[in-house]
Image (tube, rainbow, N blue to C red; front, side, top):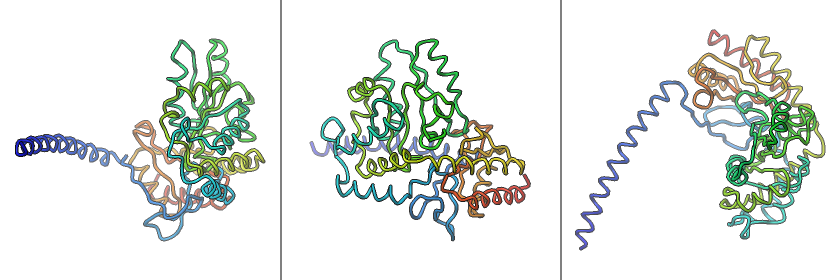
Length: 368
């Protein structure tokens, strides 16, 4: 009996080995093709905390970071780090549970209330990420013939701003709900950082907002939906990513709560960010670069001719002390590779100047 089992197990393993070997062989060829196209994505390793100046493995000196979503520089803000530490000591490392079992602490409710207040909505619900917030809303709300228009407020790769007034008018015409993903707007876009609604002067016209704790708010992770309380209550009952994902860790919640409190206190960071964005865009265009996107948004895509050039350009920038990433297909359309520069309020004007100088040097070096 044992010998028969061993023989069967051996044959099964061989079939399995053949199957995985075929898959791996095909995947290796696919990876070779990606490398040939110039769009292979290498992960650079940071030695230390996120910030405006970071130490990248393989470089001798710290470089200036122009590719993080750290729009306000809050990821290394000492008050936010301290709030995270305090929450870790007070509430522990994690909940080992989903929210509806034993995974809701008072600090989670405090953050949800603060987010609702910040967006001037009735309630908010936390998720592990904004990706989960987006994934969890449609099945829960659109079981029946309800109409919903969904858009990004700001599109992450282009820096374009959605025509929100026209979208709202369309929704009103057809009695539809408006849902806006504000990941690249919350905290810094609009006069006081309330996002795309505020930018267009139509606050209160969007019914549901999805956003993130992991970009301008400087958090490690986390997303949320905010809107009318009955809808938020229904999401707590039916939204799968919420029901089946562990609660956000207390350290993340504590640091995010402090970030929201800082944002509600003043808007000087948003004003500083706009000024520096204008400087960068104007100077780069004077050098002959095409900078796409909305003129007031800190996502500044510098458009280049092809994927190989984009990758080489980004690598050369690193040699001049500027950390930026080249994006190509499939992240962006094949004919639209770019280096996406992201300005932060924490960048000094000297940092901006060094970035522009580096672009100018690489431009000459590569005969562009």
